[in-house]
Image (cartoon, rainbow, N blue to C red; front, side, top):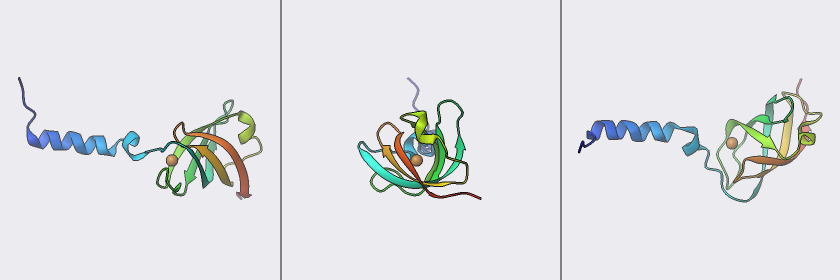
Length: 103
Ligand SMILES: [Cu+2]
């Protein structure tokens, strides 16, 4: 049996804490957020957003979200600010409204 040296155990812990999966602690339920569209995936309409903190769900960050239907992303452009509704547990955007057009 090999015991992990305490220093390496600590390093592993720090690496794990740095992983996205630990940071993006999506909570179950429906939440409302606001963010700037950074990219729109052709086809699926998945949105990369630079979003503000989503109260009760996750802190501010830039990440990609799937959309319930590609229609949600239709008409959006990078730089637009949107208000959105999200299924926090699944990271799926259910609805989005443009609140500010990008330049
Ligand atoms: Cu996020």
